[in-house]
Image (spheres, rainbow, N blue to C red):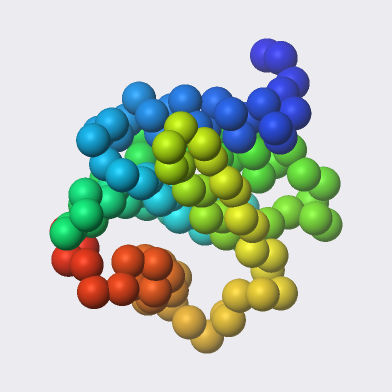
Length: 124
Protein backbone atom coordinates (compact mmCIF):
# COMPACT_ATOMS: atom_id res chain seq x y z
CA UNK A 1 0.00 0.00 0.00
CA UNK A 2 1.19 3.52 -0.79
CA UNK A 3 1.31 5.92 2.16
CA UNK A 4 -0.78 8.97 1.33
CA UNK A 5 -0.57 12.39 2.93
CA UNK A 6 -3.57 13.85 4.74
CA UNK A 7 -4.06 16.27 1.83
CA UNK A 8 -4.18 13.40 -0.67
CA UNK A 9 -6.64 11.46 1.51
CA UNK A 10 -8.85 14.57 1.80
CA UNK A 11 -8.96 14.77 -2.01
CA UNK A 12 -9.83 11.06 -2.21
CA UNK A 13 -12.61 11.63 0.32
CA UNK A 14 -13.97 14.36 -1.96
CA UNK A 15 -13.90 12.00 -4.94
CA UNK A 16 -15.67 9.28 -2.95
CA UNK A 17 -18.32 11.73 -1.74
CA UNK A 18 -18.86 12.84 -5.34
CA UNK A 19 -19.35 9.25 -6.51
CA UNK A 20 -21.74 8.41 -3.69
CA UNK A 21 -24.05 11.40 -3.83
CA UNK A 22 -26.38 13.16 -6.19
CA UNK A 23 -24.76 15.96 -8.15
CA UNK A 24 -28.05 17.90 -8.09
CA UNK A 25 -27.56 18.72 -4.41
CA UNK A 26 -26.43 22.32 -3.88
CA UNK A 27 -24.18 21.23 -1.02
CA UNK A 28 -22.95 18.01 0.53
CA UNK A 29 -22.16 17.98 4.24
CA UNK A 30 -20.27 15.05 5.72
CA UNK A 31 -20.08 14.84 9.50
CA UNK A 32 -17.98 12.13 11.10
CA UNK A 33 -16.94 11.30 14.64
CA UNK A 34 -14.16 8.83 15.16
CA UNK A 35 -12.22 7.10 17.90
CA UNK A 36 -10.37 3.78 18.06
CA UNK A 37 -12.60 1.04 16.59
CA UNK A 38 -15.61 3.40 16.24
CA UNK A 39 -16.41 5.58 13.23
CA UNK A 40 -19.76 7.14 12.47
CA UNK A 41 -19.97 9.08 9.20
CA UNK A 42 -23.18 10.75 8.03
CA UNK A 43 -23.67 12.61 4.76
CA UNK A 44 -26.36 15.17 4.04
CA UNK A 45 -27.36 16.46 0.61
CA UNK A 46 -28.98 19.91 0.45
CA UNK A 47 -31.75 20.27 -2.14
CA UNK A 48 -32.94 23.73 -1.11
CA UNK A 49 -36.18 23.02 0.74
CA UNK A 50 -35.04 19.68 2.14
CA UNK A 51 -31.89 17.89 3.20
CA UNK A 52 -31.51 14.15 2.70
CA UNK A 53 -29.30 11.89 4.81
CA UNK A 54 -27.12 9.41 2.92
CA UNK A 55 -25.11 6.59 4.48
CA UNK A 56 -21.40 6.44 3.74
CA UNK A 57 -19.96 3.51 1.83
CA UNK A 58 -17.35 1.16 3.21
CA UNK A 59 -14.74 2.79 0.93
CA UNK A 60 -15.50 6.26 2.29
CA UNK A 61 -15.49 4.96 5.86
CA UNK A 62 -12.02 3.43 5.35
CA UNK A 63 -10.73 6.67 3.81
CA UNK A 64 -11.98 8.59 6.84
CA UNK A 65 -10.23 6.14 9.13
CA UNK A 66 -7.01 6.45 7.06
CA UNK A 67 -7.22 10.24 7.41
CA UNK A 68 -7.60 9.92 11.17
CA UNK A 69 -4.62 7.55 11.37
CA UNK A 70 -2.48 9.92 9.26
CA UNK A 71 -2.01 12.19 12.28
CA UNK A 72 0.15 11.26 15.26
CA UNK A 73 -1.98 9.79 18.05
CA UNK A 74 -1.62 12.83 20.31
CA UNK A 75 -2.86 15.15 17.53
CA UNK A 76 -5.81 13.15 16.21
CA UNK A 77 -9.13 14.86 15.74
CA UNK A 78 -12.42 13.56 17.15
CA UNK A 79 -14.86 14.94 14.58
CA UNK A 80 -14.74 16.44 11.12
CA UNK A 81 -17.15 18.53 9.08
CA UNK A 82 -16.42 18.09 5.38
CA UNK A 83 -18.35 20.44 3.12
CA UNK A 84 -18.51 20.15 -0.67
CA UNK A 85 -19.90 23.16 -2.48
CA UNK A 86 -19.40 24.18 -6.12
CA UNK A 87 -16.74 21.51 -6.63
CA UNK A 88 -14.62 22.75 -3.72
CA UNK A 89 -14.25 21.21 -0.29
CA UNK A 90 -13.55 22.49 3.17
CA UNK A 91 -12.58 20.29 6.11
CA UNK A 92 -13.08 21.54 9.67
CA UNK A 93 -11.72 19.48 12.54
CA UNK A 94 -12.85 19.24 16.16
CA UNK A 95 -10.47 17.83 18.75
CA UNK A 96 -11.32 15.66 21.77
CA UNK A 97 -11.03 18.52 24.27
CA UNK A 98 -13.61 20.49 22.24
CA UNK A 99 -16.36 17.85 22.54
CA UNK A 100 -18.76 17.66 25.47
CA UNK A 101 -18.39 14.09 26.79
CA UNK A 102 -21.87 14.36 28.36
CA UNK A 103 -23.57 14.93 25.00
CA UNK A 104 -24.69 11.79 23.16
CA UNK A 105 -22.98 11.35 19.78
CA UNK A 106 -26.27 11.08 17.84
CA UNK A 107 -27.68 14.11 19.65
CA UNK A 108 -24.53 16.07 18.82
CA UNK A 109 -24.77 15.13 15.14
CA UNK A 110 -28.45 16.09 15.03
CA UNK A 111 -27.70 19.42 16.72
CA UNK A 112 -24.86 20.21 14.31
CA UNK A 113 -27.00 19.35 11.28
CA UNK A 114 -29.93 21.39 12.61
CA UNK A 115 -27.65 24.38 13.24
CA UNK A 116 -26.31 24.10 9.71
CA UNK A 117 -29.66 23.75 7.95
CA UNK A 118 -31.89 25.72 10.34
CA UNK A 119 -35.56 25.18 9.43
CA UNK A 120 -35.06 22.87 6.45
CA UNK A 121 -36.73 19.48 6.49
CA UNK A 122 -34.12 16.79 7.18
CA UNK A 123 -34.99 13.33 5.88
CA UNK A 124 -33.22 10.31 7.36
